[in-house]
Image (cartoon, rainbow, N blue to C red; front, side, top):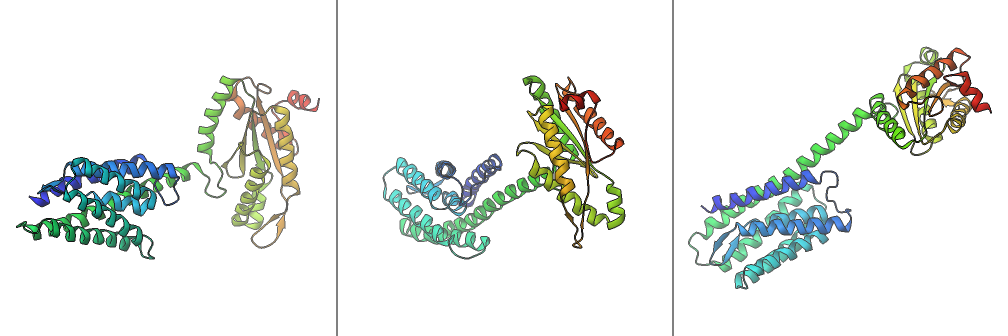
Length: 367
């Protein structure tokens, strides 16, 4: 019966911990979390402990439950501040039930458990050992206090053994739940990031480019803002691969991506769309500014010495096609097609140059 009662406490505990961890996966509690986060988690830990007290085993006005587990958890993950807040909530909640000798013992019990856990987490031990020692310390303190409060309870030994079993079980399952959910979310974030990032250069990949461009082009049309797009292609890149090998070609791509990132504004969006082709979305950028930036990129690449892994340095050039919403096209959705046409024109008319989708645009820039 005792074990069955404690298992209901355990079910409430695990359910609450799982829901909390799921809802805060983007901002998990750590020792370096902001004070506000530590305060909120401390309060939540206190509320959970008070809920556990409502479903505790009552023996001669002594309430037996798993309220110590939230204290250990918030102490382990957040340190002293959330620990003290949770501890205070538990003390207040227990005294609201009644001012009895058992309540004062519960007051001392939770203070000792909190203090012991704070000391244990400072030790240079593995995570599992810290958890084990924290739960063991709380179990020993509980056994000592309950033996004093219920010396004539005929099932005292069964109570203590049952409590120790469920306490260890609840403690380790609680920590496993938190770690499992956190690890799952980290992996999910990693997979999402990899799905949207070019593995070689770290830039956005073509999938992320398409998603971002669709959103930004729609916003630009709604707000009537300028939007420019650059299509960039390395001239004769096949010759680089054929002469020096694909490994050295990759090194050139990595260095070029750095030049592009360092040349544009922090909020402009640089992507590698495949092979030696790159794009840059220039936010709130008219054609003249886009042209100037394109020429700056072209010049920077031409004058840069691309060092290979062998120590040899080579030079490359790029061709750039430029298109701009409200100037070369009246429809943002046409920017990709126009920039691609402009790049083709640059390739056809000599390479190592900046070009536009029409001669009229070039004449406009020159004026």
